Length: 177
Image (cartoon, rainbow, N blue to C red):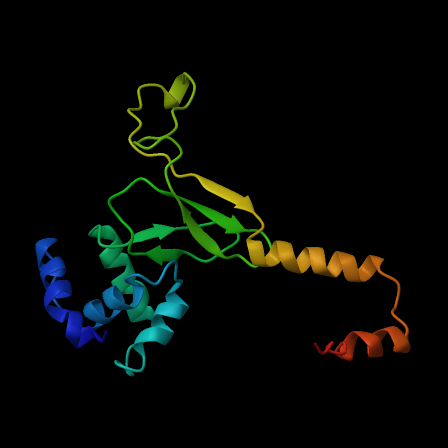
């Protein structure tokens, strides 16, 4: 779907939050829509074909305006650039692969905000009414787990002889009936 195909809906969303409808805002909103978690560089790369004169700084400005207006959500996993997503208005969390930095959504741990409640606070933290908990889980994605297991197996297995390698490449004869 191009920006012009989705412009009426996106334009209505922009107007509903009090933002002026501009080509960069429409393009950025559509680039992020349903695309998972994108950083500013990825958004810029997605829109330059349609809006070749758009600078990376303009993309940052638009991402900031759309986030401030509640049309996008910004997440900042430790050690990664800010990522933007179009999934808003629900209480979900994220899981980040510690090897490849892939990010995926995770449904709320409890099901309703704030999902987690901190222990009793004293001092400056006392008196807070908690409404949101941002949780980031860290681990290995399925692809990285498979790659690590394969590399561990290769490292521990003795080298196959040329005859064994040849036998592995030669198809077995088919028995006839």
